Length: 450
Image (cartoon, rainbow, N blue to C red; front, side):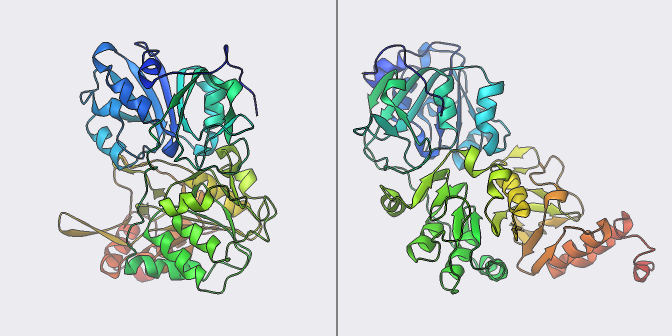
């Protein structure tokens, strides 16, 4: 950890005094997810008419940001996000939020190598303990790089932030320029979506592939929740957790004693994550819990770290694939929806681990304006961003089964992907594959007459 030294001893000021430090043309950083400030944000929003060309970097805004809401036309404030939530997606649709594409595990490096020092960094933290450290709580991510690169560092304290054990999961009093007392309001919660029958079908296939001692990475959603529920009751033993996001469903595995990390090579006995977002019950469970280890994305998301545990199972979702296996997980055409996050890096890290498995999951169909459409297509929607290339895809899973694409030719990939599509779309997909020479006549003579 590189230690930053504040130019003068940290002093406590009001949110309004902190907001007065911002000048037109400044770059600010609000950090990620639950680490974003609220009291400072509201105080700065009150200055909207006094400022121009103030830019913010952040990620996964857990609630609407006052600075953006105060400036609906984006005339004064500009919001840039590494990964969208639904609120950021809506602001992007309105033209006042902009995406920056990253692999989240590389963000420390982006700040240190490619981005100018940040005029003001503001992070929500737990009040300092006897050791002088303000804990980042459940949001480590790339916050240490922000500390290092801050021209001015402000912390907004909140007693609602749990103390979470971790590696470099905090900032020392000597590194801080200003302290704001926050409102101590409860942290935003993320409600788990309902589990569908399709989720359960996909989950049954994946759960059957998870061996004793496997190390899990999962995302958020109904299907990962269903996987964890099945694993909790399956008799699986000694599962590990090394994940980007800690969710309520992973915590259920921990509470049940199923995910004890006993066979991990790296961080044995610890549930490793870079940010947690879920229920208040989860925040209470990780507070002061020495079995939890909140680390920066340098540790959680880089493939050469992920692969050090054996039998890593990476379970991620996508919204659309083509017949060669490309997974488009973050946009709808040119409309941005979410972000790459850790999907690509976990797919690579899981595949590289000894006995590892990477799963890419999707329902076979979706409804749009009353019409059912296939999520598996000959080619991706124009403008769709490829999140995980065909060469990095291992297992693809829908409610109709699972296929492995590693080592398969283009024709075999096309046939495998068609087998996962809804039966109503398979005939058309096979014809399109044949017409576009993904399935050549020489290999499949039975199609010559079609």
